[in-house]
Image 1 (tube, rainbow, N blue to C red):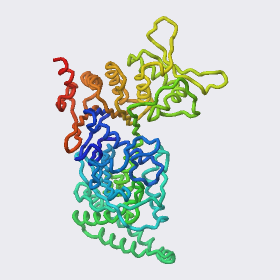
Image 2 (cartoon, rainbow, N blue to C red; image 1 turned 135 degrees about the horizontal axis):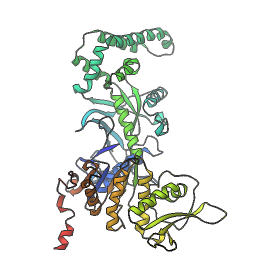
Image 3 (cartoon, rainbow, N blue to C red; image 1 turned 120 degrees about the horizontal axis):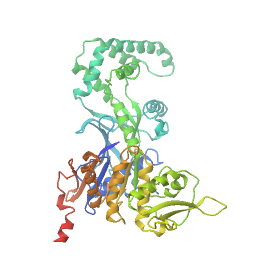
Image 4 (cartoon, rainbow, N blue to C red; image 1 turned 135 degrees about the vertical axis):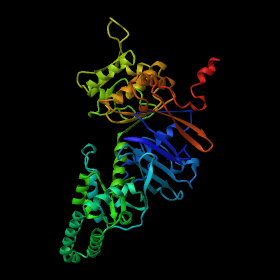
Length: 533
């Protein structure tokens, strides 16, 4: 899941800024300070990965897309083409594994290219590897086979719908140009290797015997097995010696840096070239897993980071500041949507097909004291596909139900309803929304805090990123912390300010009583006191 985001030279942000997330993240700041830039960075990556344009690196705009950011130059801070645009996504996977993409465009005549990929680990983040474009040529048929092999290891996740398709012609290479030599990353496998040298040597010897037996057949296919045979002999000689820690790191470091990753768009999908040791892939890998000492194999880490990125962005559900306006009647589309749609356009069909969700929504309308109750009514006798979304006025106690069409109530209700329903229907999603308080009165703004606090818990376990100006919302969340209904670490309050060198993001911490440990910059929310003087 999403842990943090770092931006550099992206729109309002010039110098690097880190935005830490929590189950509930509230983003405050003055107008045009750069609040929306944070959501736009996430939406840009999601839009790129979901694009049908296979292999695209960045997709700033598309027809009916999530976000429209114009050209690459417009996304750069100060529109300076000499700058490099950097986006780093930190996930909670593998003890905060982070992947950073650095983009460049040399001129307006050239395409955007991926200048560098960097892999980070831990808190605070430490760089463990860097990759740059490789000019290595490859046989696409051979590459396709290798790529599928790795994908079966990392992407055969039933929850993701099976194996993601790969187009070999869209694959390009990224070569490792720097790799950490920090002992903590290499020591576990070194100790395991020393202890299980006999098993490693046995695996290597068996592989060598098999290669020698097949060497004549391989030669007839115009392949050259001698290179692999020489490598195996070298490995056998090394593991037969009394190697020390420094020698081991040197050998493994050289092996890992020889590998060229195959990339399709932003995602690593396999290995183009380089040697992958048999004892790291077969029996040896299984033995290492049993001892909880996995080898420091950079390919595995990059693939894991790519998978974490894909899963995180797949969980992201962005909602803009305005949802689709309510209509008087609807025609059922013939599908059963699982969400309300980014613009709320699927809400009517969802309610039409899921009457249990209508009950849950009505329960929360009552909690939020919205004084209306949802009702779905079919129209006509010939077809049940024509229906209305009506609101029953619950203030008329003891009288005949009076219901009104959704467009006939205040604009705020129709705008807020998709967010309420999405919060209830979703599970383990990252729901982002801009200004949910628009057209909503102060008490309801505060009551939304109750919904957020409930939806981050079981069974929903959702997370929220809310760009807002609402003082009432944060005050309610502070009270919920004070009442011990949520924890201070469940909330990340980010204040975005703008200066001569671009936007800056500061986290304002809460204590166990719900009070702010850090002061609001520039006296934010003190306007009310100033007006009363």
